Length: 458
Image 1: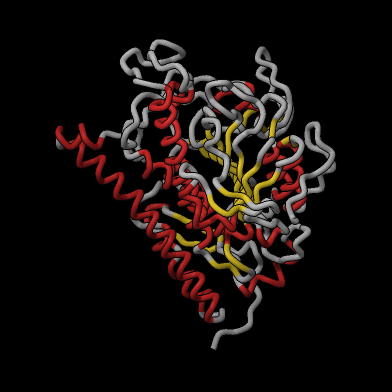
Image 2 (image 1 turned 90 degrees about the horizontal axis):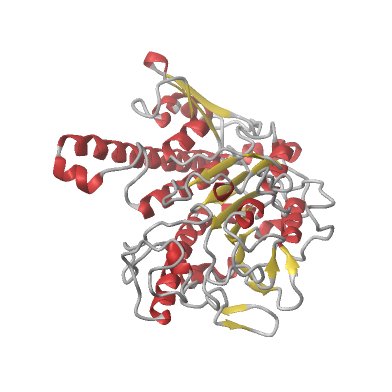
């Protein structure tokens, strides 16, 4: 019969193996931690013991005019039907808010707009100054010492001529002139959360290393907590297996020239399949929040002027940035590749919209993963705020107003979802940042130019 032992929220599973392999894993929130969690969790408006989390997901190049407008919204602002480009989020319609008339002070460029999306400041290109500390890093400092990592800064590996441009590759800033370094390999992110020692990811696996400790701990816990630990370890193990499989494929490719051509990866640990890569990074966010390894994350789903080809999407040709300038169809403007042209504006805009939809599908994947995980006080999604959007509106015009931004999750953090907000006057994104900080329990009276938070609970 398990005892009624109480655990600290900071309890970790530890293990050691032959040759210096070692592991340390944070645990998900358990019933046995709930009394302890009161002291560790931030004081938020929700009054809940489960801590809040936030992830900012950034896409460059904006969206075509109308692609962010839901198909049907009633007079009270309730979402009734999403448009075809947002349709992958339809099953999560009651868990999202779509904004209109949102702006940032420098939200109209690939450089300044990217760098200041989370700072709300002005951008000085000579000094590479983003105008202040980004909202995620303000939150990270508040949680410092309460989690294994203050924050995670993730990105996919960039493509195109602007991959070395610092401001195009930074949305998270430790201060006005210091961007936070980004992790681009799932394996590295995983190791930061779960590994110690010099062995790297490989046999023995993390789950194997901590198995004995987990068995000992489970004998002292109730049935629901034992089940939660088992479910959590299974998820970690599944992710380990995916990463190992990618490594084995790389080794096979090195010995088989034909396979090498098909499976070549630019760097170890980065899947050649862009969707697999993207979803592996999404999985890292899920594990980070579930394990309470961190409560703050940013993810650049591409750099601020991405020239990535999306020809793997049916009916799409050309790079993302070229497609964003959908009114130019000759193929001889901006940073076109000189090989791709289009028959009409409608054709090119449709391709641009298909890229928008593809990214929406990846966000839907993340929301589904978060929604499928239950915590003692609701779903993981209900305790997580996911901000997704761009620093550009219509990519062709470089529009600074009506930025495509949505907020998902946070039902247990006093956010009323299933809405379109902002049909009236324009609002600064800094007001949204201030509202999120408030729900995380971060005492912040002002952010950038905003001293009033955005109303999200009505």
